[in-house]
Figure 1 (cartoon, rainbow, N blue to C red):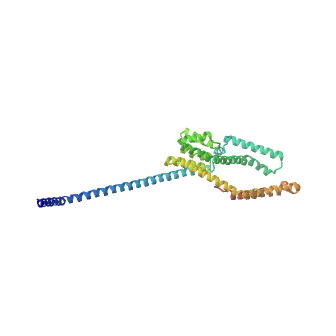
Figure 2 (figure 1 turned 90 degrees about the horizontal axis):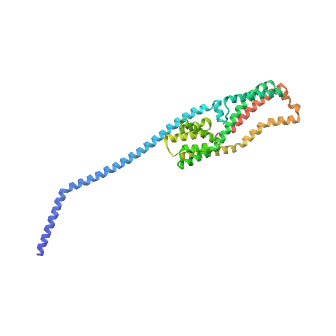
Figure 3 (figure 1 turned 90 degrees about the vertical axis):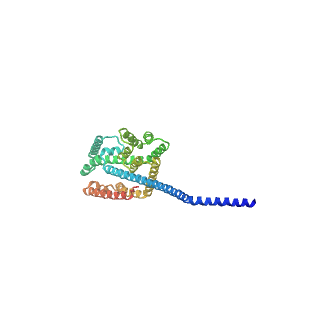
Length: 338
């Protein structure tokens, strides 16, 4: 009975192994094909993922290239416009010079004031009667043309200096306003209402330009017309590029404010380093007049020959001419642009 059971069990096991071998023989090709299919599907999915990553990377590179090209085109266009505007501003008309100086007089009033000033100078020269005839002819030209235009130029330079002193603070206020969620227009209105002169007037002109239909970038680019300095041009370029290419406006204006402050520090450093040369130039320029005055106090008859004789007049004229050339050369040597 025990041997029968072992024989039966061995037969059943042998039959099972035989059936499994036959089944494996028939199913093995299908299993290998299924594994190859799964492996191939995995490779296809992996290649698709790699292809998608490569495509996404290529799209990002293409987007960056397009954006860079857009920024470069915008910069070229803005530089061309600014070059034309700066070319026109090198010799601006008198009306524009009066606006740049912050003067409210008209061109007609300026010419009338210049003529009145020249007439007063002629009357003073006639009544005093100390100058030779050619000096009396030159006096109204100097008084009516030179001095009024020098006043305009002086006030223009002083206004630009005041603008540069306050402009970085105005940019910081705009940066804080933009970071807090306010639009750029509200930041500009805040400066136009609360800032100090002349920044207040320049930003008010931007608001007025918007009211007549200009956009903020176009209005800021026109600031250089009434405030002819590189800092105003930088501000207009930053706003124009941000409007066309996008980006973080607060970061761009913050960087501009930092650059302007660094330029201001560099100018102050250069001015401090050149003060010795400026003091020397001032002493050298004033020395002839001081010596002349001291000689007049000690020996009036000796020095008055320069003012009473024809040869003395020629000597004075030639001396003033060469002194002017020397002062002009010294001024250019110690006047550094930053």
